Image 1 (cartoon, helix red, strand yellow):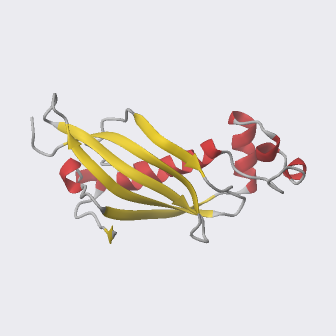
Image 2 (image 1 turned 60 degrees about the vertical axis):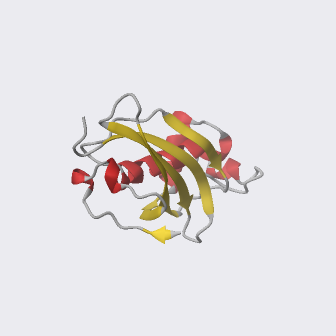
Length: 159
């Protein structure tokens, strides 16, 4: 595994700047009890996401973030630090999304992204698909979530 550094800032980055095998880390980003409760109440109203007292009686022994909240924090770092500003064309989705460990109030999360594969489009030569294996880690370096992201990205001077 190689730790990679982009040679270009995200504003000038295109598909050819993503090197298979390169590993990039971004963060940390924190999460508070208030944020967990607010997100849970709005989007995932289960007891262990919305009620700190009630959550103590669950199998988790306390408040935990919704997996979707964890994904939102992932997305924030992914968009701001990893994706190219001008060349990103959206995503057909993610594969293999897993929530492995609870995220708790006060955790500081880091996004580790490994460039898995770059696949040129056969029908549109100006772009390709970037496959990125993504891991969210807490401050103890425990992996709390993983996914394989797919993003449509333009090449710098093709098409």
